[in-house]
Every structure is written in structure tokens, then in C-alpha cells.
Length: 235
Image (cartoon, rainbow, N blue to C red):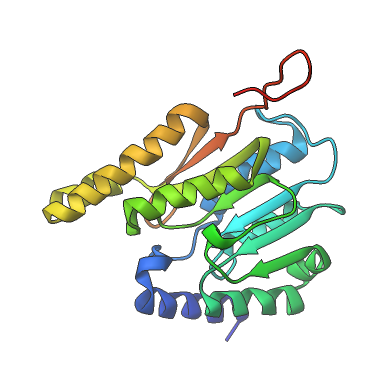
């Protein structure tokens, strides 16, 4: 059995056992992976609204799972870039560690990559990240956890850095129709939190129809720090 099929079976086993934190019903398609890494590609090629990179980039992937999107990220990395991955599921982290050791595409950047097994809220870094790519299933979480996660994203994001995360299309409205009152309230509150961040930091939205289910990728960008004439940061 090929490695990709072993990874898919591992993914489905973890979905069955840990759906609350896994969220997806299938690994991301290559089209979703391309959309999620669009801001990173733009930083490398200057073919979008983001400014081109003036040097090595720091990249963080949150919730990489078995590495469907990770493969696309490592293909875009160049010498000097730093790549960190935060994964709460130990089994997925083990799969990723094996990929960095045995898969030639991953091994190329293994010396500047690291998998951290912990919740994102507990993760800290010496320097902020230019690009954060998240595969976390927000609609599965409590509203309080979603708020904590977005706070962590922007704590870790550099000025003018980009955050890209996906949502399955129309999932919240559908869940609201079939859920009990408490879950409808939870989903509604999650929508309010995410809308608040989009309203403040929205860069663009990518539509991905070739995925199971179809998805949006939201790209947010932290604005540059504002300084007064003396050079001090202002609110």
C-alpha cells in the first residue's frame, strides 16, 4: 500500500476517533491546498495584493493533520525560510515527523522545520510569522475557543503578515437549521467572532468548489504598525 493511502487511512481513523478536533471529513484537495497557500505564493512571486518578500519568511501552519496542505507549503519554501507546525493530535504529529524524515519533498526543508505538539494557545515564538495557514475546524469548537484561537493567530502574526483559514461553504447556516438551540447559539456566536475579524482585516476570499465539501478560504492581513513622528508606536 502506498504512503498516500496509508496517510489517508490514518486520517480517517483519527476523524472517527477525534472528530471534534479533526473536523474535516476528507483530507484537503490539492485545489484547497493551493488556495490556502495563496498568500504564501503571492509573497514569493508578487502576483497578488501582498508585497513581495524582501528576505526569508517565517511560516506557521496550524492543524496540519497528515500534511495535505503542508506538502504544498514545503514546495514553496526557499533557503532561509523558517517553517513551524502546531498540531494537537499526537498521531498526526508522528505522521508528519515521518514525512520530514523519509519524504524527499519534506526532507528538503527538515533542517528548518519543526512540529510542535500542543494547543495553539500555549505556543509561543521568538519572532512573529509572516504567513499563518490554519486548517482548524472552527465550527466544531466552542465560541470561547474560537476567540482564543483568533487572539493567538494575531499575537503570532507580524505586521502586514497574512492569516489564511478555510470554512466549508454554508456550513453554519445548515447547522443552524438542524441543531438544537444551544448549538445554534454557539454557531451564531462563532459567526459573529469570525465576521468581526474579517471586517477588520479582510484581504480577499478564495472559492474552492473542487473539494469535499466545497470551501471558502479567507485571507486576512494585519495592518502595518502606526508610528508617530518620533517613531513610537500608536494605537
